[in-house]
Length: 336
Image (cartoon, rainbow, N blue to C red; front, side, top):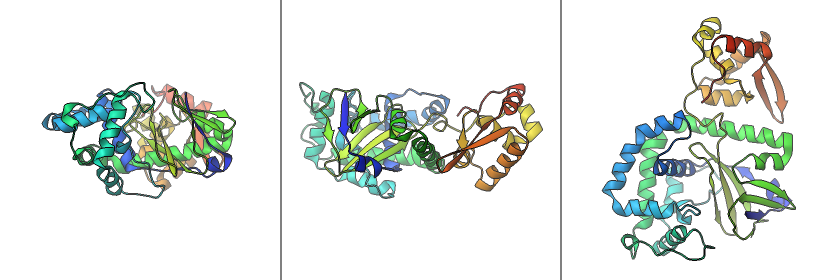
């Protein structure tokens, strides 16, 4: 397994960071895989996969960069620059991909092809990628295409969803401490104790990162996430947004429930099959904070929902009466 040595001060100073480039790279990985984890991803793929494949068919060098860079056990480092920790626009982030040295890009692609720097052997670069100095520019151009065509049109909602996920993780941290928050963050990741953070199941040597900046970066279209670093100063763990938030638009509440409560209020009640905060409900419904707050107050007064505090957040969930009402209406949840 791969693990990092993280002292208490580094862990206490770690932060959640949003990254448009990480979201775009996660989208690129999903387009490359071409398989969806839920109906929301399927609809997104249906809208954008054909255009992406046409783009690669028209650029065989770019297609080769993607095939080499998205290794089974290792991603070419220059494709995933570590966030700086400051709010950044996509254009500033992707500029770091474009500015990578050609020599470093070719070396990173060869490492990814070979399964990582600790694999027994490295695969030579395909002939189409050898001795080329335009590989960083081609990778940046493709990321700009994915951002413009397949991520930016949805970014406002995705950003709200990512912000809501951070709220949920922070609440989890306040309830169960770092062990609970880290164990639930991504597959293969868990807190081992004795200042050791397991980041994946690969047999990589441990890294000492105490004293560095550590960032946690949520993305929506992703199953496992990845890690990145700029040694020795910054390290990032990119993790999949929680399942209750990561999908597409919320499903409609049962029509009978809509008639009883009104569509907006019924939709809020249907979503509360798992506890959600007000900000999370704003993210997944697209309604304003005041509107969601009014719906919650009415549902609370009617005994259909209850609330409890989790750290700085207040989480709402359906009461048994609310469960009966939703099920009687013919629905059981508001799966996203």
